[in-house]
Length: 184
Image (cartoon, rainbow, N blue to C red; front, side, top):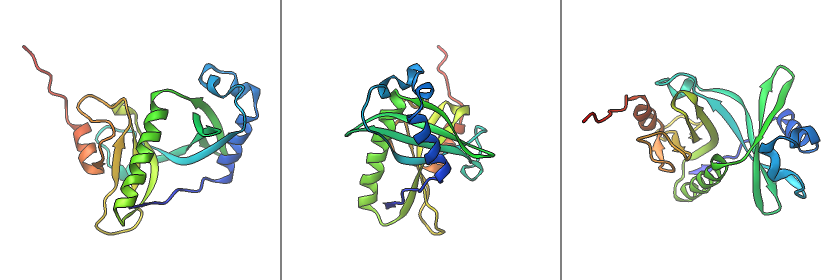
């Protein structure tokens, strides 16, 4: 599998660069890691898709924007999210925390998978709010026997193993099943 890193629209990149130059965007607590940092650069753009309904098919996921990892030197300090809008893209927010580290780990996993396989995949982020879950979606854009893969980010929902590589259909089926609670 090779990773085909997506090229974000210029309006998405402009929105992130504008936020990095904006004192107002850098003032919320979620941007604390970026204040005072030198040479902040957006990297690893990932299209963000949302699967709105629990049990929905992956093909119904809609793209809502882009998430960029923000680098300061050799470190990833935060992520910036931009939303699609009528004018192109609008900066939404900076974020840090467990999903940031988990995204980096999933991207490393995807890179290792890319070395071991000949299938081509496009990395995307998949938000599944009905399941309180986010996954790195390795989308296979060409017709053929290769399937899309999902790597759930930590923290993952109960019964799902974070950072395990799942065929998309398998993970979505696991998420769609009701949780059996032991009643003693």
